Image (cartoon, rainbow, N blue to C red; front, side, top):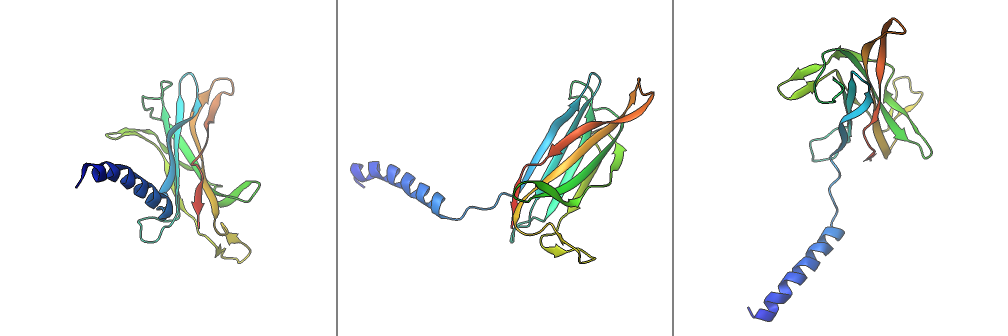
Length: 182
């Protein structure tokens, strides 16, 4: 191979690779997830949450599935705290001008936070959502059809409020990020 053809081979290979990358179909994103995001923090606590959503992709291990977890830590947001916490999960769909309820919500899963060999632990919840399936009473379609979906997680823990003289729930909300579902 001559020196000239060797020198041309590099740029031509790069151009061919770019053309193939642009023209060939790209695989769908596996899932969208946000992990260990601080949703509330005070002088003695830090509430973090994880929220994720996946959609079914033929030929790939996947499902129409949403999940979330609550973590409670000390104010440094590093040291796990052992306490009562709860989580609520809702799958939402974009309807052109607003996000609206699709599946889940309305109930809380309670549990104890802490840690194990892999890090902080806390109550978790997951939900399966259906695309274009009619509800059991036939009145509506769960989640509609293709579109943008996301998970809304509400993470809270029980803490003593000196002024109220009782335990109150404190926390915040986390959204998974948007996932295109067909």
